[in-house]
Length: 235
Ligand code: SF4
Ligand code: SF4
Image (cartoon, rainbow, N blue to C red; front, side, top):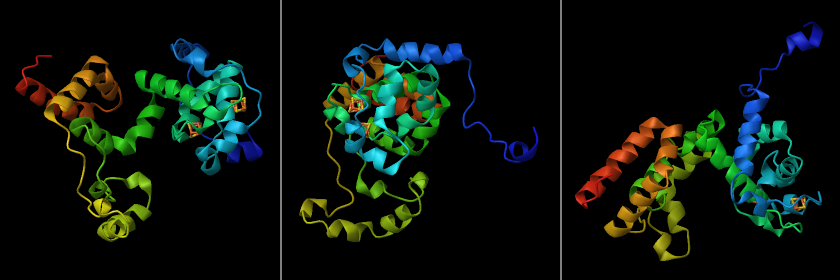
């Protein structure tokens, strides 16, 4: 290669894979029982884009997702699995599609296929959420405000450090008294926690974690198995 092309040779953003592999991933997406209910073609009207919060902040469009699926564009769908689908906030404002499509739902399926296949894009997208996943899956409850610390969320950028330093102050500025603490989380009963652990074991949700992060999987498995054994369950 010569001239400008040689000087500015772009590295591919993700590893190239054979077309057959891309087609296999798309076939897995289409085989999902929800798929036919989420896609009825596309008018290209852009209503979903106007409603989509992520489209305002990222180079992202639910219309592109619906169009790629409607046209069965295997190459584009593979590209979207690598990047676009991780920009969706899963708010489902795009459900106002006049064609009856559910672009957010198609994205849910695409994400599940990415996770199930242990794709690097899924690993990369979930890297910053390890502590959140651990907290939610081990305690059955939400992330509490005191977890908002810079070292826990390096991917949230520099503002998280300033926010975490003044967290007590920010909380006290909120009108309801119940929001003034940084420590409160819902209390989950042992019975509920056992049910959640069993669901995550039986549905394969825990196995999905092992595809993405073996260290996190071991930690979760240890916590869950200890409680399940205490409560008389053998896995
Ligand atoms: S679910 Fe995703 S695609 Fe749909 S409106 Fe929300 S952010 Fe946009
Ligand atoms: S709102 Fe529906 S029909 Fe219109 S562009 Fe979006 S997906 Fe297509």
